[in-house]
Image 1 (cartoon, rainbow, N blue to C red):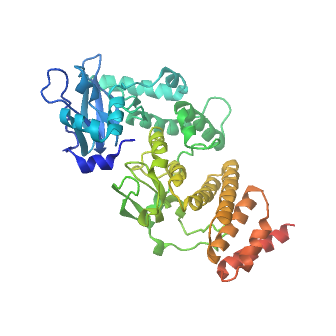
Image 2 (cartoon, rainbow, N blue to C red; image 1 turned 45 degrees about the horizontal axis):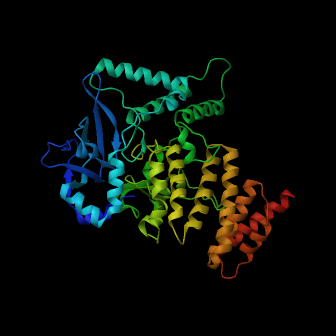
Image 3 (cartoon, one colour; image 1 turned 135 degrees about the vertical axis):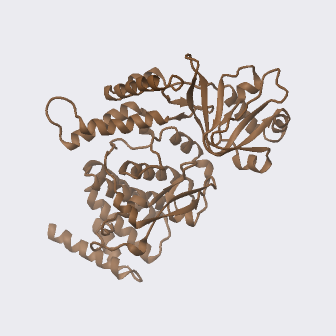
Length: 451
């Protein structure tokens, strides 16, 4: 990975406004050759099409190198435009020589990227698309050609570092597939809602086979589940990412406006009137996709960024969710699984983060009535909380919470392993919280009734 912070400090850097073309002078006749490393923002890449216009070849994000072929050769078939306000590190002939002495590791990445060509979506991926997706893609392409010859359909491309990015057109097609499959199921016998969702999940999985690298086996898409009414209980707030140090805006919950709709549940889930906090528990950095609970954005903990650098780069190549769009349940699931990936960076609280994430996921799968994934997530949560219990130093109240979480998740997963032992510990904990002791006592009473 290229050390972005070092480049920012050393310079030379140059800023480009959104829509501004970024020149890449090169070749043997160029008096001043230059190529770039993108430090902030986004750069859109366009190529000359056979029809004589330009065709989108994808987008470059932070850390990507561009202009390398122009720098070393006479090839000049790409146009680079700032998609957002962007800052780049400028590599001239002089700074190229300086890098060879001061940071050969960065120069190696630059050289590797300079000769890695942009590639289009492979034929294998194209043929794996289901028929409805193929039809929608064809319709969009035909309409675009009629409307404007210079704009061809944006395809999925690979950046200079070999990372796959999903174009805007592909994301729109997927969104339309969600709507069309739900509105017009396959011919024949009428499909039940669960069967429609399963059909959609299979079609999207065929179109985007790499999603298995983020989600566990059995995870599906759950179209049409949004909670616009939640907006009245959240407010916008600016955060700084602990990973890339960039600032972004997201939402925080008005805790003072929440009213508990029922007593705390046996597995410690809290129900509020017209609101579920799990929908806003996770923050996602819009620049690097680093994700975790609000607490660790506002009160950062020690972390090793290098542990997740590659995973985040891989995830960036697979995610189709636009984190600036309206929040739906697929947004929430994706944020949680990104946070699961990022938990590996934390040296002290990683176990606690994973346990809480699996607990949240179990409740979210329960909400969408996916019983199999709810049980699976509850089992993973129970095991994660057991790791916290055995490997962490806990206060009496933390131990109560952990024991109740283990017991509750074991019960929901049908495990029943030492369940009563953990409940007894939570109930009798010295210097514990009486609320949690009562929850444990009530849970033990319900178990005796079941017997």
